[in-house]
Length: 410
Image 1 (cartoon, rainbow, N blue to C red):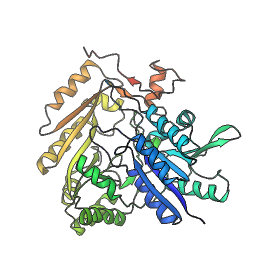
Image 2 (cartoon, rainbow, N blue to C red):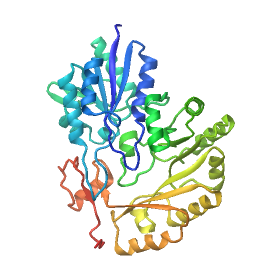
Image 3 (tube, rainbow, N blue to C red):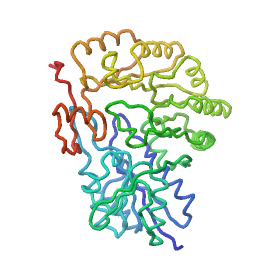
């Protein structure tokens, strides 16, 4: 097969609280490079390049395919409410005007609104959910004029209408090689890089989009591949801090213990952090994780009122939060609590409970956010429709927030 060219584009420009390495396109790059040696793959990152530079890059490379990753829809800040859709439309329109390439979009943000964003942004094809195998199959099918019907997660135009292929399976063994031209930038700007150890989330928090993006079934990745990637970062690039971007790190703890043992045996001296919750977590686990390099935890605590934790469908109690926070203090593990104030069921009394209980937690940082961003497909969306906060046909592409009417924020 003759050589073809693909540009993988990270369209994300959001830098708060810090720039995040475009992990999704690195997974795509690694997998496609292993499966399609005839495909020349290039990367363009809008965190480091402008639209004018992108257009020049298109003219220089003249790609056959352009894959554009959409990570964020908006800034998820009730006080700012900045939408990124206009920027994405400009990128796709510029690609269309400046090249004859096939345009394919995907990414976490896209996967929340697949049909709506396909209709709005008008690519040639799109993939919702994880993209490695689907993108491989799509390019292979286009190169060989084969059917698209059995490509999981694919969106395309069929007889004038948008066709959405269901996802029947998930990828269990992604490989990852990080691009050094990108790692240098993100290491300098954020002081860490990010990788996954697992995909999927088994929980049912009423506001969360992780199950929509990755599915409920948890798939642990190859621990040897994880350690190999970390070894390359540590020995070749002197990078010694990473963040595990799993929806929740402390699920599938049998796997986590195996990974921790391998990290300890490898003696990499790599420090790491991750998203945790308070379920299935005890002193023995935290001690093992610390020996393996754990230095900081970001807890999706959301509230310090048991009433609200139940409303949010969190799998823990305030007592669990206080107990695990104290364990972290005793073990010298830094941690932060992220809070959602004013969400579903919140009252002035439950807010007072959160404020009072926060005083029981020392040596921590709290990140409070006001209101819940409403996303389609979540249980919060159904609640908002029932309470007439939004209409059933509201696309929710522009930021809309649920804010309890039973609180006084003045």
